[in-house]
Amino acid sequence: MFSIETFSFIKWFLHPSAFFHTLFYWWKIFSRILLKKFDTIMGTKIYQFIYYPSYLKKMAKLVEPYAYNAGFLKNIKATDHKHDVNSLEMVGPVVIKLSTSKLICENIPDWSKEFEDRENTFSLHRWGWLLMLAVENPSVGTKKWGIRVMKDWLLKMKHLKSHSAWESYSTSERIVNALLFFYILRKYPCKADEDLEFLEQGLMEMAGHVIRNLEFHGELTNNHVLNNARALYMLGRFSGCENMADIGRKIFIEETPKMITPSGFLREDSASYHLLLLRTYLEVLWTANYTDDVLFSKKTKPFVASMVKAANFLRIYDDVEKRWAIPLIGDVTPDFPLGWLGNIFRSRPAMDLYCPVGCEVDFSSGWNGIWKT
View 1 (cartoon, rainbow, N blue to C red):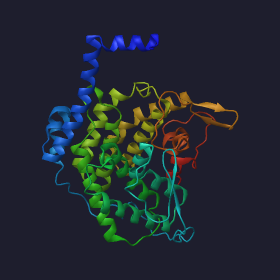
View 2: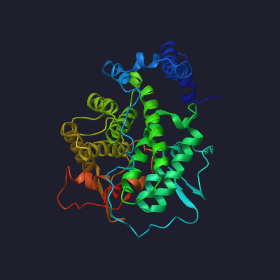
View 3: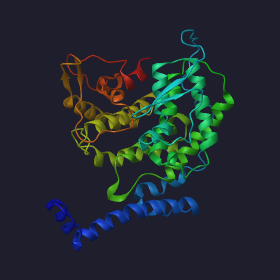
């Protein structure tokens, strides 16, 4: 009836110490979820009091009411240059690339759509495909369509805080992808002042939600909190909300040694997640340089450079594809298609920090295309 392995597992599970250890582990997970739900419903901050580290408990209170410089999306170092090439409105369906599939949108995505693969549902609400679209098709049409999409999301999803789209990791991704979308398309003029003001308010509200729901889980805290910090730091710097940026800075300074080894490797033993976190740190360092945050840039640069060196250590030459690549060791992130971050160690931001002999900058592969202009 039962195999020896099944019998051994049942015997182990029913052992008092194993049973209570497993029960306690799952209780910690479910209690965090229940506590967050209670805080959301009742407007309390019990979760923050229990799980937030002491260095953040006071800082998180300073941000509200989130004062910021209005017009920051419009003023992302725009130029007066006129672009005639690729400036027509997009015609026909738009192909959205999710983590493991494609979604063809004739106009605006259906935000209520639930995919069989839950990661695709997350991807839909993280707006990473908007970022990919901006890289692959920079145009006035792309910019106008993206603004319409983001506005529509806010109108339909703004008050649905119980939806999975509002979990902190997805919200953080949405904030950063929106900022980089406007950076990529900064040279393309688009008169939509009222819509941009609405989007700015929406992004600030998202950031407030992240601050109230930072992904600190005691000893179970993982790299998600660094993604929260990236969103707060980048939005804080772009919007002039320094209290918000300070929270992001502090998290990076305090949590990086817990996530990254002194030699620059991600402690989670995953090549794919190493590239994902390298993206996070490169974007934060770029933001520090872009917004003249000299002190934080100086503090951040050494360990980001060590992560780039670690990525280069992992790379191998693919004789079939005739290119350098990083083998998929450990878990694989579902956040983006594999090719999007696969060559990040040869991007301009990475090679500004560490440039191996004989290695040339790749300006076109996936994420690398953000920085080609």
